[in-house]
Length: 128
Ligand SMILES: CC(C)(COP(=O)(O)OP(=O)(O)OC[C@H]1O[C@@H](n2cnc3c(N)ncnc32)[C@H](O)[C@@H]1OP(=O)(O)O)[C@@H](O)C(=O)NCCC(=O)NCCS
Image 1 (cartoon, rainbow, N blue to C red):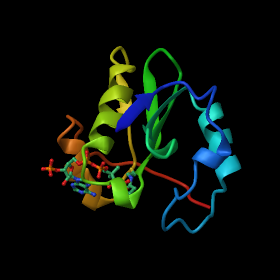
Image 2 (cartoon, rainbow, N blue to C red):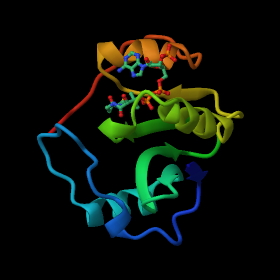
Image 3 (cartoon, rainbow, N blue to C red):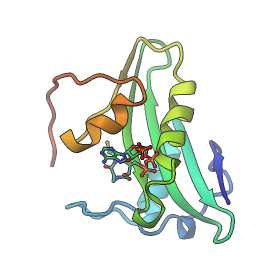
C-alpha cells in the first residue's frame, strides 16, 4: 500500500534511495533530505511494505503569488500507478491561491502535466 505525507519530520536519508535517475549531477540521499527540508512544500509517497519513499514532489513559493515545482519523481518500478498524478494533485491543492505555478519539463512529460490542467509556455534557464 502507498501512503502520502507532507511531513518530513520522521523521514531519514535511508528512506530516500534510488532517486535522481539519469541525472548528470548525482544527488546523494542526504542531499535529497536537505532538498526536502529546504522546500516550502513537499509531498512524499511511501510504500508501507518497505517504509521507503517511492515518489516525491517539491514546491518553492513566495507564499503570495508565485510557486515553482522544481522536482517530481516516481521510482521507475512504481511508475504508471497514478502516484505521480497524486503527488502533483496534492501539491496543486496547497497552491490554490497562487497566480503563477511553474514547472520546467521535457517535451515528453508535457502530456502528463496537461492532464493536470497545465499549459505549455516558454522560459529561460541556467543549468550547471
Ligand atoms: C513523470 C512521472 C513523475 C509520472 O509519474 P507516474 O506515477 O508514472 O504517473 P502516473 O501513473 O500518475 O501517470 C498518469 C498518466 O500520465 C501518463 N504519463 C506518465 N508519465 C508520462 C510521461 N513521461 N509522458 C506522458 N505521459 C505520461 C501515464 O501514462 C498515465 O496515463 P494513463 O492514466 O492514461 O495511463 C514519472 O514518469 C517520473 O518520475 N519520470 C521521471 C522523472 C520526470 O520526468 N519527472 C518530471 C520532471 S518535471
